[in-house]
Amino acid sequence: MTTELKDIRKVFNQGKPNEFVALRGITLALDTRKVTVLKGPSGSGKTTLLSIIGCMARPTSGRIVVAE
Image 1 (cartoon, rainbow, N blue to C red):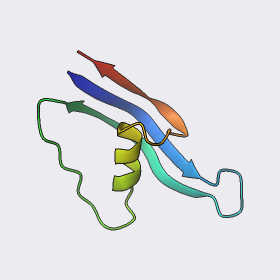
Image 2: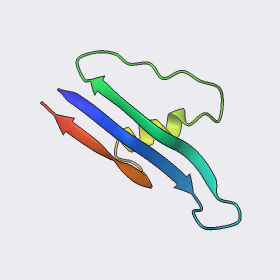
Image 3: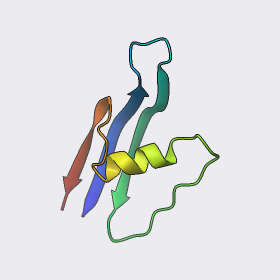
Image 4: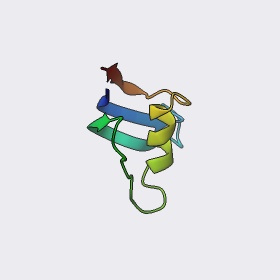
């Protein structure tokens, strides 16, 4: 089974003066039978991306496709 993320973008406070783009154009395929590691500095969007993958948050744009 795979989970594909296609051009995921997440913007907080969209259209407001304090708008913050957390994710820009993330595209990747995850094999659910394998361990995947997200690594990066603080504030790089790791938790935001995991929240979107886990359906705890919605992306501003892009698609998530789960296929067998």
